[in-house]
Image 1: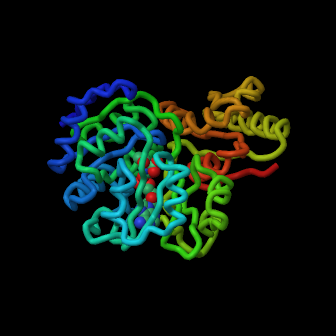
Image 2: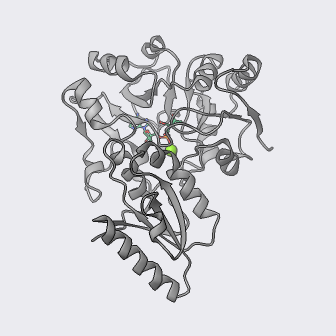
Image 3: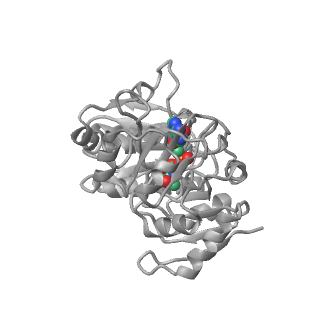
Length: 349
Ligand code: TXA
Ligand code: MG
């Protein structure tokens, strides 16, 4: 069955449409919906069968836990067994918003939702469509990013339809998302709150709110012997079909190197793609150049990243060279995604 796509204006929410989507979730069905980060694939988080359906639709490994989305702070205590005061402080600062917190779970959350873990990841999104849907669905919506496992996360309803159109019941189309990369994940089951996935809420923002914060060692050191604490971070997500290499260094040297590589590849009859900032995009005479945004507007770079990776998948490009984007605030999150897409292939020059 092909999913129905329903347009919904985030500024003027159609209550009847939301009620219909909520009914689907209450009956164990799956509904994709926009959040401020990426589109989510929603199912009732307290229904083991719905969670199982999410894994099946995405082709996701069953050890990779789902994030439970709530619409109100008060909903948290029904699913989280211990909520440290520091988590309350962080919620005051950044909920609703692009932040996920991990707590010991209560029994009401089935193991199917948490990949068998004793903890539960919880997010209170700010997107009005997401919040209305969560309320209509009884308050607890499990939602991974609404891509097929291994594809870039979806930033538009069309991306969701491409990947999951045949697997789910309904897609709520609220337009392109605002942020474009997934939420920051902070683990509160540790002695010191620990970042398991970087996102829009940066390490500096967390430190200024919480004081001490750690970062999962597996994020800092790609060759770490320890597995990442967020099971999903161990997979090579977001892999484009073409072979992607990041070229890092001083700007003019990077441009020269990418041009050399593009010329070499062209001489061998290979088709090349290039991911460039607006400032340097015109400096590449060869290859299919995609402009990700200005270095002065890092939000644009974050928002366009997945769209560009998907767009290259629609072309015949075999090799992609990308500039690096260590921008001031979101650079850590952007580069975390880009490095994974590249399987950590980086040329330092
Ligand atoms: O922005 C987002 O967080 C989006 C939107 C839809 O809300 N959702 C999202 O979900 O990115 P997903 O499933 O694609 O990524 C969830 C990540 C995975 O890496 C998973 O392993 C980790 O969160 N995770 C979930 N529950 C966890 C837990 N109890 N302990 C450790 N990691 C957990
Ligand atoms: Mg995902």
